[in-house]
Image (cartoon, rainbow, N blue to C red; front, top):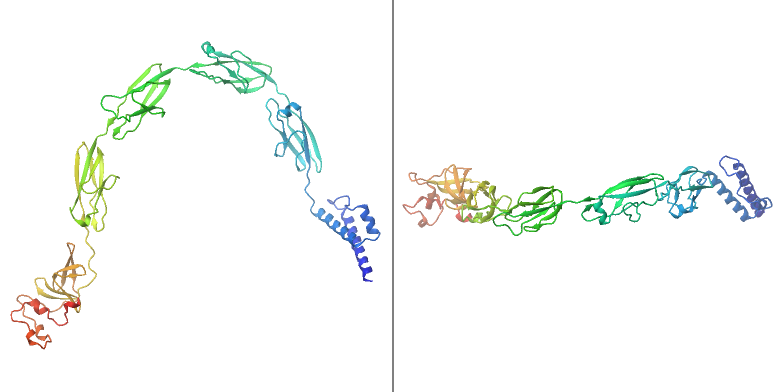
Length: 495
């Protein structure tokens, strides 16, 4: 029962597919002929098997897809070229800008419509022109004929007669060499440039010819005799460098004393090779207008030099042992070192930077003679930064003497150093310190009321010094600093 139902459903599906395809076949753009074979139709009507129904269904689906998205429409073109001589000479064709094809070849697919056929240029032939109306799924055949162009000849006569004995020759468009008065083979009409044999001492002609149909083009070609002059450069009196040389128009370098150089008539520039310590001659411009020797004197001149040395101050100061100087943009030189070969004229002396010092200003000098010149430059010490500590209080003993305290228990006497600064003055309102020859004045944060001087009374401080040993009391006539050293709270070892 189930098997019979399956067959009925398969037959109905095939019939539906056939009806759909038959309906669509009448729509625009769909293939006019069905893609089924008659055998397939008879099988579908006489009881299709399972495999047959599946095949027909797939075929119907493909036909439907073909209708929805048909393949591109193309055509082809085939060109036959005549005559055979043109084909042998290299005649070819192409359509649509593709590669060149030989006579009888078919093009690749070309879209329907008018297509232009182009032809390769062949020497001695006139290329044809053609168009083709391309149709879908068809090969359009065309015959194209290369034509023989009209031709003419050329005849050349040489001038002057003197050149004939040197065997002049000419040729046209790659032909063999022809002699005076000979006529060329027939050549396609058009404009051509003639070629001529080279003859020593003569300038070859430069001639173009226009060949006309069935005519002999008579041409006169004139060789021109080359005229020469000579250039000779001589050195003047006095010593000259062995390396001194000259050349013409940037050519090879030549030494003094060589034989005069043969040149054609015209204008020339003579230049000279640079030589160390010598000033080369100025460039010469010579107009060689006759067949003769043109002699010129051109001498090198020694370059005058002076000498410069520079001393640096303060002398023998180890702190500026790295000080140096230089001339213009030259190398750095040590103090007293000599700069030799200094050209006369203006120069600049400059000095090297040294940390902590102000270098000398640059010196502008003008050398006017070949002598030795001495100059000097002095470095100035830049003041180091001031101390970062503060003075909290002082005890003055008179005359700028006393003790300065940086903390309640740390004090310094005049002459001692505080963090690299030497204490040189102690007053009630200020102290003065010294470092590397520079003085620094600091204000006192808290001024002590204690003050000692020659006329001042002895302060009662010593009487209050706690000490069980009375034998350690100050002796009569003791100086003030000894008393101060025993002020309570002041411990020199705490510094």
